[in-house]
Amino acid sequence: MRNMYDAIVLGLGGMGSATVYQLARRGQRVLGIERFTPGNDRGSSHGQSRIIRKSYFEDPAYVPLLLRAYELWHQLERESGQQLLRPTGGLMIGSPTSQLLQGSMRSAREHNLPHEILDASEIQRRYPVLTPAPHEIALYETDAGVLQPEACIHAHLTQAAAHGAELHYEEPVLQWEANGEGMLVTTASGSYHAARLVITAGSWLPELMAGLGLPLHVERRVMYWFTPQGGAAPFNPSHFPIYIWEVDDGHTFYGFPDMGGLPAGVKVALHSIPDDICTPETLDRSMRPAEIARMRTYLTGRIPALSQGAFVAGLACMYTLTPDGHFIISAHPQHPAAILSATCSGHGFKFASVIGEILADLALNGATPHPIGLFAPTRFTTGR
Ligand SMILES: Cc1cc2nc3c(=O)[nH]c(=O)nc-3n(C[C@H](O)[C@H](O)[C@H](O)COP(=O)(O)OP(=O)(O)OC[C@H]3O[C@@H](n4cnc5c(N)ncnc54)[C@H](O)[C@@H]3O)c2cc1C
Image (cartoon, rainbow, N blue to C red; front, side, top):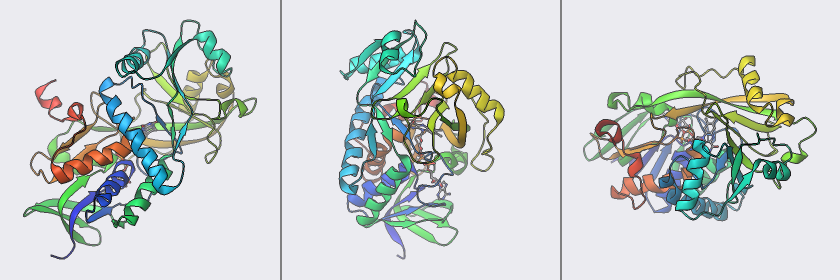
């Protein structure tokens, strides 16, 4: 049959690029289809930097996946001959009873991860630009660092192509359907048949899967870049770590060292404060003075060099959220030859390398040795 593939991957962002790489590496005849350009800024995987860390406050069940994700990022670095993961160390800052500290300490202890607990004066002694409140502490983790998302996507795609993957860009998928034993995918410029389909469409997934009633919604989130007052030297990644900070109102913000590149400046963002519910079509990409002011409020008294710094730029991005913040990875309930992945909820990028491995396992074998029980969509219907 014309255009018969072993697998089609729909959407080549963070997760899809890793999946085509994994499938092509296993000798599969794979087609990847992306509606925009490689490493585009239309979805959830743009903006220069993503945190990677191991002492996972969200749930210790993620730690084995993280250990494998690190291995696979390093494998991709070796194959592509470029650094993608910059180790910087990481601070989880908050009161000792905060969810962030409690959860991070639990993961670190259960999985024997190297870490240190620092009190407020030790945090400030090591990182003078941070001024925590006297009751706040930090879990410091050596292995945390920064992934460059656009470079990771390019590296996965380049290696996938080197292993024989066919990659189509600027070709939106219009529909897909089960067809005989496999799946038929129709795009703006053709139709393709494959034994398996992996849907890694990020924030477009809720629309593509509207009939399934998955409890997913998409929210806008903004990344902000500020020029530090007093200069960027204290934020140099050779001695300044990534950090996540849970403040006493229960919300978290996070930030990075000065990574160079564009936008220039030091990046910070609010993680937990709800923003507009949107779709990829209705996402407001404008920067609103009131929310820049709100970002400064969270920095005030905590990182004065940034709260008093000049605002340089902001970029809007999308979180695709589940009610409990954990991912959804599953075969389609009616069409087991289609595998879906909703692996955002604002913390998915670091896992992209291992999600690619998991999705390739599921597409080829119907099962994976990785522990993914936490991500079954049945948890929303049967209760967990
Ligand atoms: C502001 C922000 C900060 C974040 N910070 C972190 C962090 O520090 N650490 C971390 O681990 N994670 C973080 N995340 C989450 C992480 O970035 C996401 O989990 C990850 O990028 C999701 O990747 P994806 O492949 O699911 O989506 P995307 O990368 O958006 O890819 C989906 C792709 O599918 C394509 N597509 C959709 N529909 C079609 C169609 N019909 N036809 C063809 N192509 C289609 C889209 O064009 C897009 O390229 C953050 C997210 C945001 C928004």
